[in-house]
Length: 114
Image 1 (cartoon, helix red, strand yellow):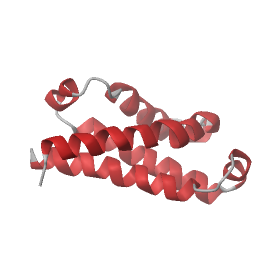
Image 2 (cartoon, rainbow, N blue to C red; image 1 turned 90 degrees about the vertical axis):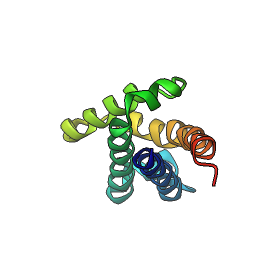
Image 3 (cartoon, rainbow, N blue to C red; image 1 turned 90 degrees about the horizontal axis):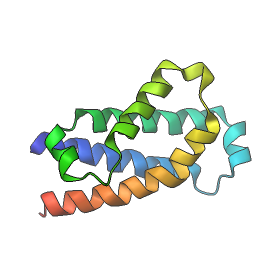
């Protein structure tokens, strides 16, 4: 289960990074900054990659997390980079990533209490 802990930790760390990148940033400022957009997108890709590496048993144990949606989003942005829907990325960064961070932090505490 050690690998699972590392993947879950990667998700939390990427979500924290996203929060720091967009703290105090409006959607308009987000759209005007290639650096912030690229940084957020990269961390969303990290989240999707880590989620894809988790064993099916972990995903089944925590069905309230949309694992498939997370990995599908990663695949979408990796393969359609030049046609990314930035409104969707903003929503993932401001709504989905913080909620996911909270859920995964609870999983880490439950599965790895030390």
